[in-house]
Image (cartoon, rainbow, N blue to C red; front, side, top):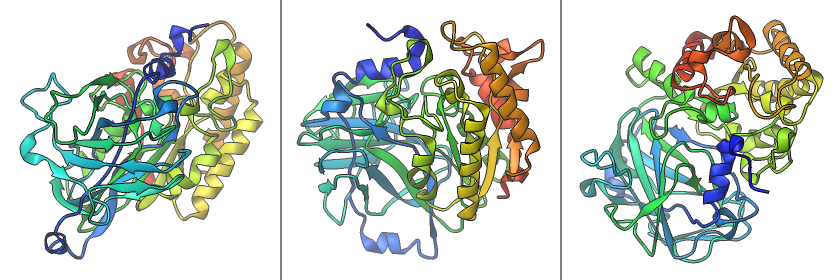
Amino acid sequence: MSTPKRWHFVAATAALLMVGTPTVVANAEPSAEVARHGRTTWAASWATAVARGNSGGLTNRGLENQTIRNIVHTTVGGPVLRVRLSNMYGEQDVQIGRATIARPDESTPDDLSDIDPSTLRELTFGGSSSATMNQGAELLSDPIAFPIGDQEDLVVTVYYPVLTGPVTFHGTSRQTSFIGDTDLTSDAGDGLTRLADCCWFFLSGVDVQRRRSPGSVVVFGDSIADGNGSTLNANKRWPDLLADRFIDARPDSRTPAVLNTSLAGNRLNHEGAEPGAGGFPGYNELGPNALARLDEDIFAQTDARAVITHLGINDIWMSDDSAEEIITSLRQINQQVKSRGLRSLVGTLTPYEGHGEPGVWTPEKEATRQAVNEYLRTSKEFDGVIDFDRVLRDPEQPSRLLPAYDSGDHIHPNDAGNKAMAGAVSLRLLGL
C-alpha cells in the first residue's frame, strides 16, 4: 500500500530516498591565517539532528561515486569556521573523497545549486582533502579562514567515492539538495541535479570562531520546529525567526546562536520506525525516542547554554500515550538539561483537530493535550514556559489552529504561525 499523501512530512522524503546519495569533507587553512584570529572561542552557528537512513531506497543503499550539495543557513558569523560531519548511524566507515564550501551565486536565485566560484574553498581534515569517517563517529574539518556573517547561506559539497552504506541524515530540511555522479565538489552547478526538497546528508553542524560568545539556544522539537508547513528554501521555521529576533535585539558579538535539533515525527517515548494512528507507517528518519537523543542533539552542541523543548504532540496523536507518560518524559528531559547547567524552557502542545484520518484526533486525545498543558503551565519545574498553544489556537475553536496560522494540514503552522511562535519566546527567560 502506498504511503498516504497526508504523511507528506516524511512520505516525500521516503519516496525520493529510493534513489539517492550524500555528504561531507574538509580542507585546512594555512595556520598563520588562522592564528591571526587568536583569543577567540568556538561557537556553534548551525546544527541539525540526524537519524539512520530509512529501510529502503537511497538512504538505505547509500552513495557511491556521487557528490551531494547541501545548503545551510547560519545564525551567527565569524572569521573562521569548521564543518562537522556525522556517521553516527552508519554501518561502516565512510570515505570522504573531497569537500568544499562556498557561497551561493546570488545572481542566479532560481538555480539554487549554483555557487559563486570566486568563494569556493576546499575543506581539509588533518591537512588532507580526503578522510575516513569511522562507523558511529563524527568528523571535524580543519579550521578555515572563511568569514561569514549572521544569517548567511553556505553551500557544502561533498564527494563520496565508494559506497557509504546506510546514511546518517536529516530528512526534513525544507531546503533543496542536489546530487551528481563523480567528483563535482568544484562544479559551479551545471553538473548537479535536484535531489529533493528534503535532506542534509552526513552534515551535522557548522561552528565559527567569535571574539566572545553568549552561547547557543538549542531547540529540541519535532516537525513543528523542523519547519513543516513553512515556505521551502526561505528559512521561515520558528527557530530561524527566533534567531532574527536575537540579531535585531543584539546586533553584535553578544548575539547567541539558535541551533535547531528538531526531528519531524519525533516522539518522547517511541522509536521513529514504530507505526502510528491512521495508518502511519513509521520511518527511521523520525529518529530514536527523544531521551535517547539528549547526548548527541543537546549536550554535544558547541557552547549550548539554554534548551527549548517542544515535544509530545506526536506521542498523543500517533501513539495515544497518556498525559502521565508524556509528563514523565518531559520532566526527565528537564532534569537532565538542568543537571548539565543549562537553562530549560518548555513549550505547550499546540492544537491539531482536523489533522489526518478519523482516530488521529479524538476528544480523548484532546483531553490528554489539555492535561499536559495544564501541568506545564502550573508545575514551575522548568525555568520558563512558552505558551505556543495560546498563541496558535483559534479562540472560537481552541482544539484547532487559528486559520490564519494553519499551513493547511491543521497541525503545522504556516510562515505567519511560525513568526507568532518565535515572537512568543521571552528572550529574558533564556537568560542569555
